[in-house]
Image 1 (tube, one colour):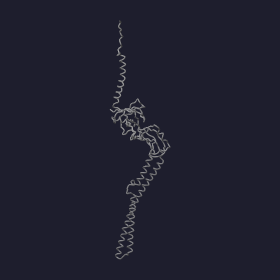
Image 2 (cartoon, rainbow, N blue to C red; image 1 turned 30 degrees about the vertical axis):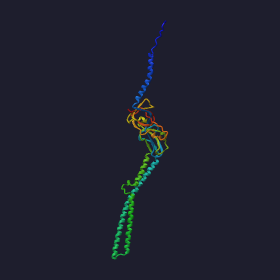
Image 3 (tube, one colour; image 1 turned 45 degrees about the vertical axis):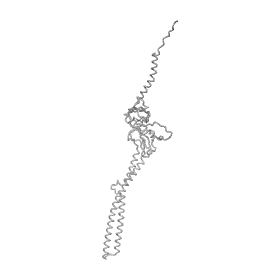
Image 4 (cartoon, rainbow, N blue to C red; image 1 turned 90 degrees about the vertical axis):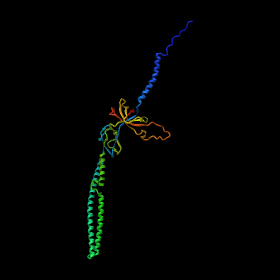
Length: 343
């Protein structure tokens, strides 16, 4: 009887099987390694894409109300500090200044007159006092003559009446002198008198308003929204006409989660990448950390004392100051991504 011999079975540990198993194991290992690398690389830094470029903006407004005569700037025009940007109609203010100067001159004339009146009233008091002394002397003489029998009682009574009249005239002169001195206020310098000081203040105010008919730029920057101001329109006091974006004042405001501020400090290094210029990484540092969350300064802050309260992670504004002059233009409002190195 012939014996059957089976063919040899192929080994299950062939090189192709090993390669497939290694490939299947390497995929999760790579995922774990990549996740571990990302986790380790993220240590010591916090990142947010809730960040925007901010530029200091100065509103140009008038201290007086008048019509616009000329506008010296156009949209996006560079301006320098002290440059005249708007000229208002100044005719009413020139007239007011002239009237104020006339009132000041009249006040000075009045004070000089009051000082002269003071001198005249003093002389009148001296004369009235001499008249009283003479009347008293005459009354005493008539009393002596009456005692000796050389005068009548009628003469004595006339002398007594003259004394009373002289005393009344002296009192009236003293009252007029006191009134004159009160009006003169006892000031030797005319410019220190209240009448003159009041008129001078009105004159200074008129001069101030006349000077404010020319609006100047308070800083170096770029004029914007100038189309809102046209010659001939009325410019109301305190109402902004247009704005000046201050040169070299740009910074980045990054809104970090409150849970990311534990290790953040002022002065730490930061990297900024603008969405408009993704190929440029700007260097900077933490300039300041906000004292309140964004919701705290909102027009309608959240009221959490309700039964439907839901906890929401708050964001705190962090100001990032850029180091050096950026190679790209920093346009206000541009979106950015900020990374702060905390370790």
